[in-house]
Structures are given as C-alpha cells and as structure tokens.
Image 1 (cartoon, rainbow, N blue to C red):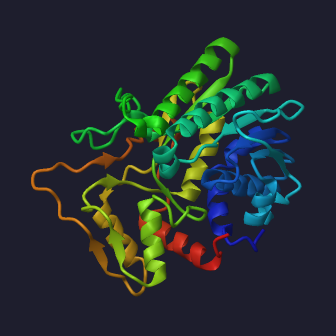
Image 2: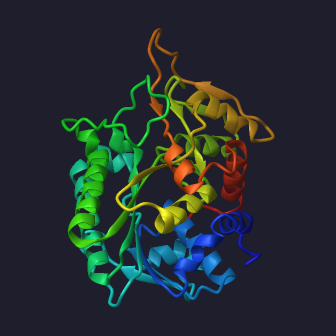
Length: 349
C-alpha cells in the first residue's frame, strides 16, 4: 500500500470514513462512471479501505472499454476486488446476483458534448439513470447514490452568494446548452420516483467544482487549465475577465463526502457537495501561480464591464456540515500543490 503515490490522501480518506466502512463489509457494489475523475477516486479509496480493514468487499465497475481502463489505471483495474463490466450506461446487460449498493457516477460534465450534441448528452443522462435505477431495483440494492450537479439550479442569482439546496431555480429549458443541467434534474426526479414506487433509498449529491489527481488538465475546467499552464512554464491565461466566483473541493475530501453520503445520507434528500470558500477566477489563477516556485505571470484577456455583477457558482454546504459533519479539510493551496505534484509524477495516458 505504501507504494501508492496517493497514500497520504488515501490515509486521509480512511481516517475520516473509518466508521462507515463496516457497512460495506462483505458487500457487492456496482459503480458506473468508474473510469472517470469521481470513479477513480471512489475505486482508489475503496481498495485502500478494503485492504486496510480486510472488508472482503467487491466493486463491479461499468466501463465502455475495459481494455482502455486497464491502460489508464492498471493498478485499479487488475485488483482482485474489482470486476470490470463492459457496456454502455444506457443499455448494459445487468450482472447477475444481488448487489448491496449502487453508485451512479457516469456522465461527466463535458462542455464539448453539451455544446455539439445536446441530444446525446440528454439521452445518456436520462436513459442511463433510468437503466441504472432499474438494475438497482432488480439487484436488490436499496442504497443508491446519484452524482448530480449544481447545474440543476440554473444561473445562480448574483444576490445569492452561496446557493442552498432549497433554491428553486432551474436551467433555461429553451436553451440547448441546458441539456446537461436538465438531464440531471430529470435524473433526480427519476430517483425519487423509484423511491416512491419501488422502495429504493436514493441519495442525491449535487456536485460543484473540484481539484485533484485524475482531474483532466486540458478541458474546460479553469483550475485544470491554470495548473497545466503553470506546469508548462508559461503564463497562466484567463480567457475572460476573471470576475466569476467559484470554489473548489479537493478530491480526497470529495471521496470522504461521497462515501459518507452513500452510507449515512438521508434518502430522497439532496446535498450540495463542494467547498463554500469562494474566490474569483482571477484570484484562483493567482493562487495557482503562488503554488509554484517560479510563480508564473497571470494574464487576463478582458477587462471587467463597468457596473456588471460577477457570476457565481458556489454552493451552500450547511446541510452536509450540520447533518453529516462534512467539510473542507484540505485547503485550496495545498490541493493545488498536490494536484500539480501528481501531474508531474504521473504522465497523462
């Protein structure tokens, strides 16, 4: 276990989740999205706890390409406790036998797919969730964790600094770019319908923004792009005016939140998942710069519009804090340093 480059992070997860793992002793889990950012952290932390506590549990992971996953993360794919199940989330063949827990973490927030093929995005989210819920019902798995999104709230009003779970906003249903957010809204509705009609116990994790190992550094995630820029030795470039507010939870803390929600979350109840420590994109870029010895220059492409209020995408996390004792344990500067160290040590595959 000590050879794992994430050992200290995984010890951190185990230290803050030790009480919940007994619920998974000898159990079978089914995880969709197991090859993505969330899924890799779920598998890393599951395998760490499974060995450390001798849980003798199994994780069955849905993937479109087992071969590709083995190339990306052989240390996860080739573990005896991990069983890869090939298929598409919309129509995969149900594995046999009883399962105790289902985590539906498929359908990453791909801005490119949302822009270029919103129909495919919506279909994958909605049909995939329905198919996974039906699998859970037939497999006898009562506890079901859905990784939803803060996108279900639509644009956050500027007067609300931290959006709570009780906010009744929504994406614009006439905007094609709303395919992702509307799909997640329907997924949540499907969960509570299965709760009402079939007795499932769905827990809804409305996820915001994150940073950590396995985060793609070349897509639409600002913090990933900034870390990529700093690692390349050039300037950190902001394409906009740097005024939007965001917040970031480190991946090891995210794993603590997700496992705690699966075991201890209230069924049918949504929980915002993220950090409530907000900062502007410009301040984020400066924080990334300060995490590197050479402190690269920050370049901002546009000047703020006079009188314009900045956009916000920041959760209120009081519910998770008050009900489940969850919070931010690893600060942003340290999270950036750990992510950068991982990216330097582990070449992208």
